[in-house]
Image (cartoon, helix red, strand yellow):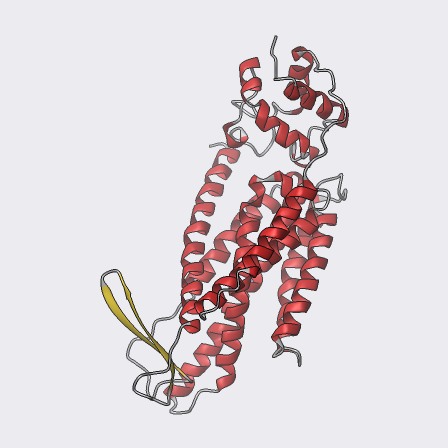
Length: 393
């Protein structure tokens, strides 16, 4: 069976698993952060209880309580929340390896950005994944770890540096997903390396009859809060490959930074809403940042209408620069089927996809990493043909 065909199925199934487990993890995370923010003083005045919430859902009433530290004794059944996070990262990392490491010459390396060997790009990518977690964890454990305002400022500055470096080392699409993989790694490491180990130590202390050390509760809460602010930026990065005007922008690292911070602002709005506030300036500010990006990042309109080339010239360019991937049976290595089902072998097919071609050609998203060495002049001829109405006669 063809390896490229199997790779496509692996891509699909891993992506599906990643979305399923991601929904489960994000849902759980958002629920517990919301629960924490809406707790009320216990009606019975129990000094061991930090707060409680009554709610109704699915036709039933629920009564939840959160203890200041721990109950007097452990219940027989204690529910843990960890596998959602682990499987989200495992499936996402496997997908990242399959696309961006195995096919590094196509999706990670762009010679127009930095002409490096694929193996070196993969090595740098792996180093950034590990280094991102180590640096973040050391910062949280440092003497500044309790100052959330300072941590936030350092985090934003670090994101700017990482985005700048990634977008000047890797191709735009690969750079965005590299930052997303780094962020996702930090999030799951928070669960696996801090939250769950701390909770295990709390449970073990209670089994011995000792009072749990409250520092583990503080650390776990801190990392959970950090994760909730990173969630929306990561979701944006996950969907960005479908929108080349983001990662192919001249200022793509600023786009990544601005939209990431906008996602954090939106999340902050929901957090404050759960506490009874309504700071509408937060989503308004996020929308203003995105609007500014859209306005400043819009491609320049040509000052004069270029003469449309004859269709025979267009067909020649498409045949030499596009059809190796966009054919019923692609000849480009690594492609078992034409990307997104786009086939451009006949005049009718080329005309059908003219509008989509304009976006991909104008943003230089295609060919990925300019695999087929399309020239600026050829891009201009294709755009002039589309602007003229994509005639085929």
